[in-house]
Image (tube, rainbow, N blue to C red; front, top):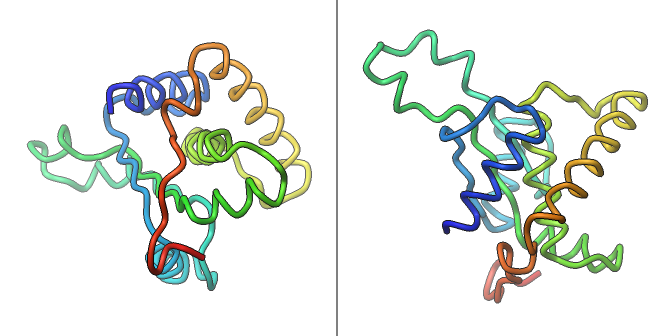
Length: 153
């Protein structure tokens, strides 16, 4: 957990997301990811990563709860990461690290809905991943999980 925390903090710093200690990182199965994706994004089926940035909503919280509030929440689906990594012949750990970086870039204000914005975001992803790879072993931080039951697709 300490390595994941250090990795997340460094990734947040490199991406310029402005998130330090207020990051909630959740790894969920395909069913839960599909439910979140449909409820909050309006898409059906599981996806790789979803980021919720709560910083603007902190202004409506009472003063005493604002300091404990999470700045952003990133939800990652390891089963999707495993599948995508396999399809692109990439290491699983690198795929999961990329999802975390992708979520943090969204929290930094990046968007990938238009082709020109997507190209810019992909360049920033690559730059961030290259910097992180010099500092961390992705395999040590994101070991491939043993998927069972509903998560074994």
